[in-house]
Image (cartoon, rainbow, N blue to C red; front, top):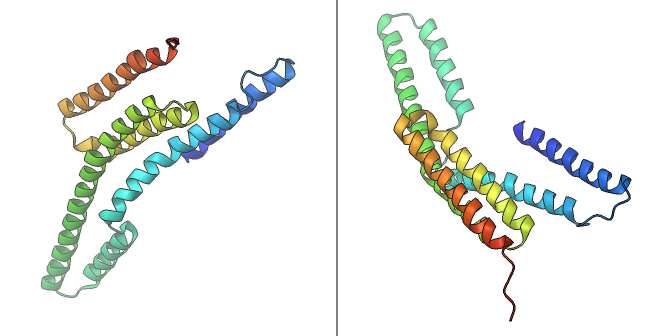
Length: 192
């Protein structure tokens, strides 16, 4: 839903830029601007999906729907059980399933964080070195989205200090890119 909203916002911005240039009769500076924005946005949207679904290929996620259906089935059997011993056994089985599910979910969150967040930072840095604006910008934004997605998986389990350090690293990387890389790109090239 959020992605759809972002797509609509980008489409409106691109359309507004195109219409404004055409309506004013000005020659547009870059006739490929809309396509570059769309290409960059495509990289930005697909990058986090690629990384996080890639992680799921190697570490299969628990089927949440099947898990909750099984818990519901155990609850119903527990309610219908005639004696207390059977009720206690079913309750223990349900509790055991919930514990295994939580442990697997926590492990998946850690993997998405410890793989997704660093890959997001690396992709953001790599994007800052790419000369093609649409690709470089798309990779940078995709890296930021991947980093954010990786953090979202494990954010609640991080300590306050951990959250601060993660944000500090991300901020430092963006600051370096903004100061160092973008200023390098604006410098006139020295021709002999």
